[in-house]
Length: 228
Image 1 (cartoon, rainbow, N blue to C red):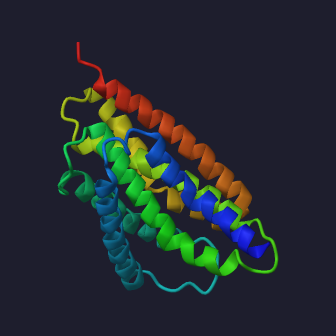
Image 2 (spheres, one colour):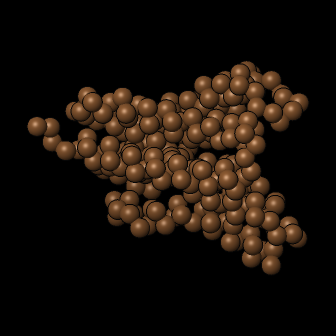
């Protein structure tokens, strides 16, 4: 039963990444190499973030919300944006379109995040003797992160690769990118500042990810239309 629960949680956590790759044109254009490169960039970015967090943040004795500490975390979190910029603009990719490139980068980014932050807790905890919803909720959280990562990569693609985008959409693109990039700080405030429990926070993340994906898709479609 414990092994069955572990595999269920693992499939919920990592399965959507494989489904997204195989069910979209990414598999037809063989963009796996791009996703792998993005995953490597993510790991390097995570290492830089870890060093910055250990250097500039103090260890808190309480679990209460500290605005100054969370502000520093949010600033350090923008290292992810720099990493995505490098993955989208500096890495050599196969001859794939901009549309497929940002999806492949976002997919690799999200998969690396799930492996780094969820695989070990899942392996240790989901095989326990007692059933818990915590790891199912973590799997759902990984799905929300997948959508948010692809959305952020899409917004980054519009910011850095799309040259002829309508000027009226530029502030909206940057605003959406800031919102997605600061989602970890937002959810931290909901948990520590407002005292939300994990199911409520995960529900918020799932809803927000769908909203941001829809907005990003609309922005991407609007920027692809020929200017009048």
